[in-house]
Amino acid sequence: MAIERTLVLVKPDALQRELVGQVISRIERRGFKIVGVKMALLDQKTLKEHYAHLAAKPFFPRIAEFMSSAPVIAMAIEGFDAVEVLRKMSGVTKSSAAEPGTIRGDFALSVMCNIIHASDSKEAAAAELKRFFKASELFDWKRANVENVYAPDER
Image 1 (cartoon, rainbow, N blue to C red):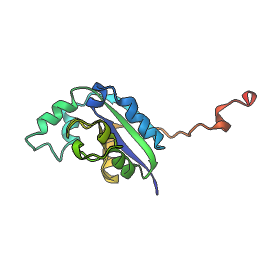
Image 2 (image 1 turned 60 degrees about the vertical axis):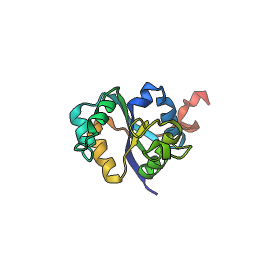
Image 3 (image 1 turned 180 degrees about the vertical axis):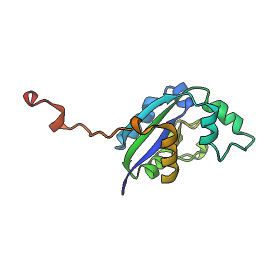
Image 4 (image 1 turned 30 degrees about the horizontal axis):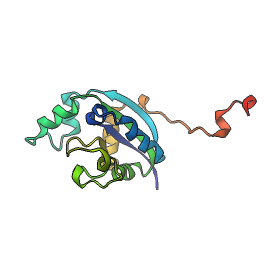
């Protein structure tokens, strides 16, 4: 087990269906830290770069239209085996095959409207984090606990 950082995009359909809080809550309850977060409306340049493996496909314009139909919530997530675990939490891309209990299994409506993107490898995570975040937008911070939440006179 290693501490890793990965990218998660909460897709336009999650915003449109008011599911953002539930997605973020699942990530936090699993023990992951959000070390960067922003809302962005994706432009064509970013979409072509992010979906380079699909950009030549005839269905790419539909993906681009969907992914720019509303903002996404981009998050840099940190934790043990973050890449692998977040992929498992997300569920398979095809919503009808996604297991109940996964984010897609519980919320996705189709292959395209599948709520979440999570980097599929450590290499992809590194590239995708750079695509969506400047180094100055990523933060190291410690979790609160009883020892550091209260001032000495409040104990």
